[in-house]
Length: 204
Image 1 (cartoon, rainbow, N blue to C red):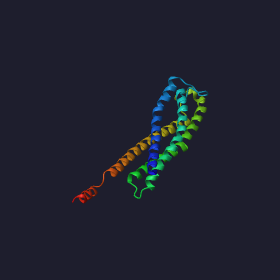
Image 2 (cartoon, rainbow, N blue to C red):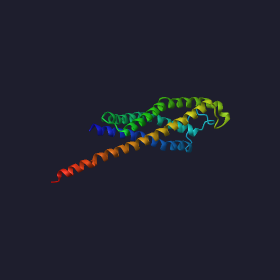
Image 3 (cartoon, rainbow, N blue to C red):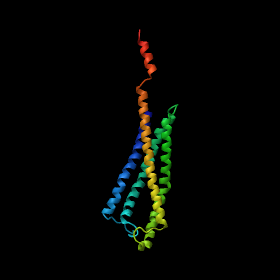
Image 4 (cartoon, one colour):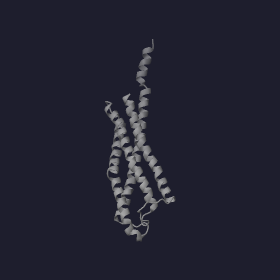
């Protein structure tokens, strides 16, 4: 029973994390498109040189990412429960389990960097850029200064980390699915020698 619960914990955690990233990937364009088309505005934003639609979209989407931190932490914990059971509950740990554990460690490390430093730094720079924007209003839209360049660079890094997490989690799904199919085959398909011995023993 406890092994089944651990398996369920792993799959629930993996589904939460991968499904959450997929949902965010779908929601992001819609948020920014809506902010542009509806011409939503934020007080105190210099437009130009900043783009009001991007600023509103970033404000909304930034809050979504901030709340998603909780889901990430819960999902990683649930996945670790399942993986830990696979490692500690078996005398001989399968190679697929070690692969899944390695992939989990990669996702956990990326998540720690992302939510522990990168996102916080991006939000700090966003406020700095907004405060400095009026001084660059005469340069028009697209004006770039050191803090804005740094913000754009870190934002690109954050997007790349998000893609990396999605690909690694997809890899975990594939490996874990293959592992589950192998378990079913071993459970329902007895070894040929055993079948032969039982058949011979029944013969007169």
